[in-house]
Image 1 (cartoon, rainbow, N blue to C red):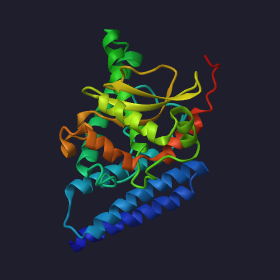
Image 2: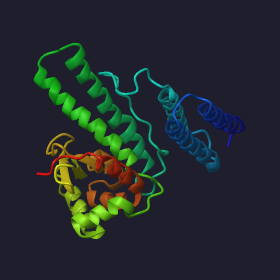
Image 3: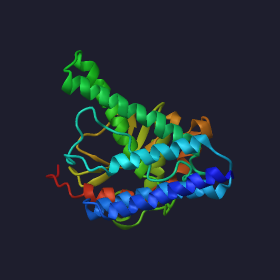
Image 4: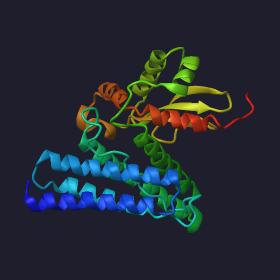
Amino acid sequence: MDKDYQAYLEKLLEWGEKVKQKLKDSDLTEEEIKHATEQVEIWQENLSDMMASNQDEDMDRLEDVRMQAEQLVENFRKPQDASSVPYGKHKLPPLPYAYNALEPYISEQIMRLHHQKHHRAYVDGLNKAEKALYIDKKDPIKHWLREQAFHGSGHYLHTIFWYNMTPKSKKKPDGAILRQIEKDFGSWRAFKDMFTKAANSVEGDGWAVLLWTPRSGKLAVQSFEKHQLFQVPDTIPLLVLDVWEHAYYLQHYNDKAAYIDNWWNVVNWDNVNDRFKEASKVKWQLF
């Protein structure tokens, strides 16, 4: 590895340590400091992997590092009103791990393209639709409502999707979500088989989703077409699987089943449990 390149990476690592110290001294809440520190450490792990590989300068990965650092700084700036996102001001969330962290199950090339290109396009599309609807009051409203549904669903589903995955997967659920799965589906295996069938059944572009339904007090499995079609109102997604071709084609070509089988190895069951804990607080009269 070139000495100047190595020295540059080392300086970036040192910058990360300074950022973590500033976070400790900031007026962010304890939970916000913990989350932000974890994000910096994930970024530093990516740098350490680059140094350990002992490879020559990699411009693609350097660009990833730069973009991730910019996103970290932007996300750490506490907004004036943290209770909402202004219309047309949505941002691409950073991945909670490096682009190559899910290998060999999902390739670095796919993760980079999926996050930087596809998800970013949904964020841009949602912002454009919201500005047209709520700020510029553009017509025809029917067009912009469709754009809001498509791009908004794409943005929100992908944001769940990234955090639904981890390189440190437990491979199977535990805790409250496992108990609810066993109660509603009979067993973990029965649920996994049903969810897998739902994912494989999607024709063209769409998603497989595990939902919490406050109106019935049960879990449910549903497939979404594209992002916004066949959604079930008054439900909360807990676990989502993107089965659009852009999520797997570069690695598995048209073998969607292989992609789905691989994906089970990176499911973040801690995140699913956290989502279930919050979702189950919603109490409606049962009908």
